[in-house]
Amino acid sequence: MEPILHALEAPGSFIGVPTTTTPRRGGRQHSLAMASPQPRLLFLLSCLALALIAGAEEHHHEFIIQETPVKRLCKTHNIVTVNGQFPGPTLEVREGDTLVINVVNKAQYDITIHWYVLVRFSHPPECTTGWADGPEFVTQCPIKPGGSYKYRFTIEGQEGTLWWHAHSSWLRATVYGALIIRPKEGKEYPFVKPSREVPLILGEWWNANPVDVIREAQRTGGAPNVSDAFTINGQPGDFFKCSEKGTVPDDDLDHHLLSCVGCMTRKPFPGETALLRFINGALNHELFVTIAQHKMTVVGVDASYTKPFTTEVLMIAPGQTTDVLVTMDQAPTRYYIAARAYVSGQNVGFDNTTTTAVIEYDCGCASDFGPKIQPAFPALPAFNDTATATAFSAGIKSPDKVKVHENVDEYLFFTVGLGLFNCKPGELCAGPNNNTRFTASMNNVSFVFPKTDSLLHAHYYKIPGVFTTDFPAHPPVQFDYTAKNVSQALWQPVPATKLYPLRFGSVVQLVLQDTSIVTPENHPIHLHGYDFLILAQGFGNFDPKKDVEKFNYVDPPQRNTVAVPVNGWAVIQFVADNPGVWLMHCHLDVHITWGLAMAFLVEDGYGELQSLEAPPVDLPMCS
Ligand SMILES: [Cu+2]
Image (cartoon, rainbow, N blue to C red; front, side, top):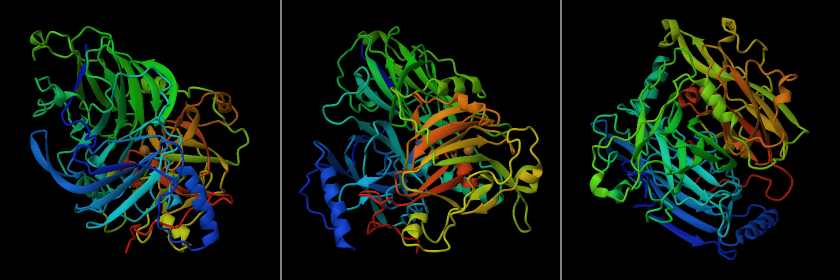
C-alpha cells in the first residue's frame, strides 16, 4: 500500500532552480584579499583542512526574488517569491556541505534571507563568518531592488529539518522554503529508515499584501490584521473556497506526491513508515498539528535529534521544525492532516481557521477509490489548550546524555512581554483605549533596529553611534512578573538599540520570563547563531531556589527556538563560541516588529577560527 500525500504545489525541490553541486576539494583556487598575510594564511590553511572532509559538497543556487501571480482563496495576488515558486525551493544537503546562494533582488522591496544554519564557518574564502546569517540591519543591510548578495556557509553539527525565510519586514509570509540536512555520506539516521520523506511547511495566507498589513499597523499603533488562512505547502486545503484542486484526489498521482524529495521507492509498501518534516512558517501563530487515526513519533526538532516520543498532537511555534515518523498502519483509505492555532494570549485576535492536507493509501483497488470517500478528520485541541502544548514540549528530550555546564559564566534573566506607549501629540494611537500604541520589550528595552548600518558591520569596523553594549543582565525593576494587575507604571519600555556583550567561550545561562503586561502569552524566542539546551520550563515567576530542582542535567532538548510558556519561564544554556552579533527575538513577527528582541555581541577569541573575518566584498551597505 502506497500512501499518497495530497496537496498542491509541493515545495519546489530544485524544479527550475539553477543549481550546481561540486565536490569540494582542498586544492581549489580562491581569491582572497589578505589584509595581514600571516594570520590570514593560518586561517586559510585551517580552512583548507576543514575543506578536506571526505565527501562534503558545495551546492550553488541562484535565488531570484521576484513578484509572481499566485491564486489562493479565489483571488490572484502578486506575491514576492523565490524563482517564481511558492513555497520556495527546497534545499537538500548533507551535514558538512557548503551552500553558496546568490540572492538577486528583482522585486520592489528591500530583502534579506535567514537560513537557520548556525553560520559559523564557510570554506574559503571567508572561513569564519557571521555575515551570512541574514537578519536585516543586524548582520547586513538589506539587498536593495536591483542588488544581489551571495550567502556562503557550511553546515556543521546540524542534521534534520531547517528552513530559510526572508528576514525583512513581513516578506517571510511568502518568501520561505525547506532546508533538509541529511547525515554525511555513509552515516544513517538514528531511527528506522523511512520509506519516504516529505517536508510539510505550515504558513499563513493573507488576502492583503502582508507588507501593507504591518505598515498600516505601524502607522496606527494598533494590532495588525490576522491572516485569512493557514496553509500546508502553500495550500489552505479542502475547507476553503477555490482550494479543491490538488488537495483532493485525482488521477494525476505524481502531481499529488507531496514533494517526493528523498523518496526511496514508489512501489507499494505495506505498513510503510514515512518521515514527515513539519516546519511552522506562520508569521504570528503557534500551531497544533494532528493526523487522523495516526500517531506520530517525534525524532527531531530544529535539526537536532530527539529521543523518540510518540504523540497524537504536535505544537509547533513559528521558527520551529518537528520531524516525525508516521507508520501507515490504518485501514487503506484517506486521512486528513490538520493544523490550527494554539492561542495563549487573552483578547488577542487570531486566525481561527483550519488547514488540511490529505494522506491517501494506495489500496490496490483504484477503481473503488472514488473521490466520494471523505477523508477521516482528526480531533484538534481547543485553541487555548495550554495543557496539551505543555505536555508536548515536556516530551522532547535529547537522545543521549548531554554535556550541561555546571560552571556558568553569565547568569542572565530577561523578561519577555508586551507593553503600551502612551500617545504623543501627532501620533495615531489605535492601541487599547485609543490613546496608546502597542509595543514589546525584553528587560524593558524595546529593540530599535538601526537604519544607517548593520550591527555586525558597525561592530567590525568600530563605527560609533549605531548601538550601545549596555543591555541589562536583569530587569531594571523586579516585580511580580505574572501578577494579574502589574502596575501601569511598568507598561512603558524604553526604545533603544542595546546589545549584551559576551566573552568568547563564556557559558551563558538565561532565564526567559514571560510577563502579564497587556496579556501573558507564549512567546517563541529564537536565538540566531547558536543551538541551546532547554534546561527547564515552568509557570509563574522563576524561583532560583525552588526551580533549580527542575533542571534537566541529563538529556535536555537542544533547539534554536523555545516556546516560553504563557505566564511562565524557560531556562536555556549555550556556549558563546561563535563570534559576531546574534539577534534573539520573539518569532511571532508582530512582536519582533514591536521590539521584542535584543542582540548578543560575542567577542573574538584568541585561537584559530575564533575571530570574525572581514565582510564579503558584496555585503550590502545601507547607503
Ligand atoms: Cu512574542
